[in-house]
Length: 333
Image 1 (cartoon, rainbow, N blue to C red):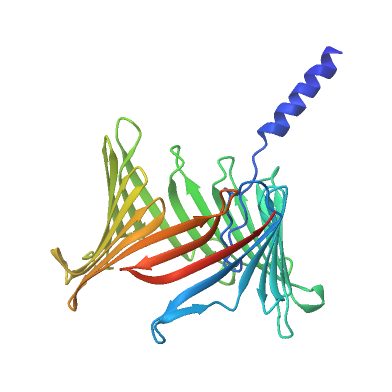
Image 2 (tube, helix red, strand yellow):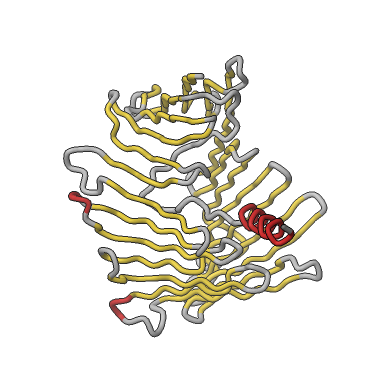
């Protein structure tokens, strides 16, 4: 009996401690907004999107409407419809990961794309099908136990290796090497590679990062930490070692400020152009550009309207007092 109990405890621990791979990241997947804060488990919702058109100086309704189908409050399918005709569908598993992408249309040459997640072996696979259920290509992503990508492989057909990448990390789980291999040129040495060096403080926080490509310094990042904020500054260099661009990022709680400056002929004091973005809770609230044409500042404000369940049903974004985007969400419970 003790052996049985011990086995059950071990099995239960193993099940609960199993790591789940993230949803496959692919440029072939349509970017969709999935609301993780919905209340009262709705069954379905769809969003009509209107965006400002400068030529007509008015809001234009998008012809594509995303429809979200849910089970127990979790999204299981997203349909992209135009005039009530489904153009594309994304299907998700119980963990919110995309598993199938179906595309419809007379001239669609990639009608189905599938995604497999092998959590035990830390491997995820994207398979692209042509008409007739023929495999056109395949991508394989491999992870380590920290769920960091350690390899990516791309195949023509089912098994003809086309190209692949390898990623290496240090004991701090920071990337130290990114290697690209083109199978056409052989797999003995990388076609392109990035090497990264770090320095850490006594608290094991990064204080500097140097990125090298083909033995040339590509960028340098310096980090600074304060009681209420963190600052990151990255300088990018041309092939001859001359600074050409600098990024500054400041984070303080829900506030994030990004500044991008471009140098004039290596002058690291004066910028020929500069751009600033201010984000609050992930939303862009101010954009400023300084160029030879002058200074332009755009301030954004977003207002929400909610239903009786506490879910938003209307979102309106203003730019300097002008409505530039409106989203109307209809929710069925």
